[in-house]
Amino acid sequence: PAGNADRRDARGGGVKVGQGMIELIPVKTHIVTKRDDIADVIEKYAGPQIGPGDVVSVAESVVAITQGRYRRPEEMNPSLLAMILSRFIHVDSSCSSPCGMQCTMDEGGTLRVLMAFIVGGIAKVFGNSGMFYKLAGEQAALIDDVTGTMPPFDKVLVFGPKEPVKVAEKIKERLGCFGAAVADVNDLKRAAVLGVSDGLDPHELSRILIDNPFGNANQQTPIVIIKNYAAAVAATRG
View (cartoon, rainbow, N blue to C red):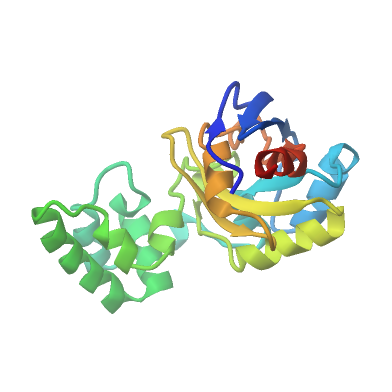
């Protein structure tokens, strides 16, 4: 790994990674839909700025939207179980709404989610929080409830993307960059890199992106170029 990142000005500016410097460049796009191919979008808007030593990161919700992985609440009919379980989930979680919980159950399986809820509740009594999300399947943490992403998709529930590693490899191959990543980042200092191209350290990228340089709301900047990443890693490794 390149070492801990000393982040400054996350929405564009110099960032120290180990012994090297990188730059985070958010890239504005049109409103991306399921008719778009994410690699085409990146090539169109960011292609001229991307060099062979750069890493391209893209917001996971936008990747999911291009895959058609979203549902409208008005088209759903949450079960009684989903309505009951959602009442016991923290309000900041997408699973705290009946529709969010139903989506989690549809993706992970009703029995699995129910068992995760029971075991998670017991674990929480003993001071072990977060067990529900570890057991219910990755979509429990990845689903964005309404208002969780950029308009007009702030009116729908957006699932996590499928095969993020393959998406990252496709982006790297298309753009000829050092690497690519699909990331789930928010303004609560939570960052998770869901998929990376071969040779990248997802934990290091999470540290770099922790201050959320993406703009998934009106900014419409779901792509972030990590400039000079390869050089920064090389300088650190000596």
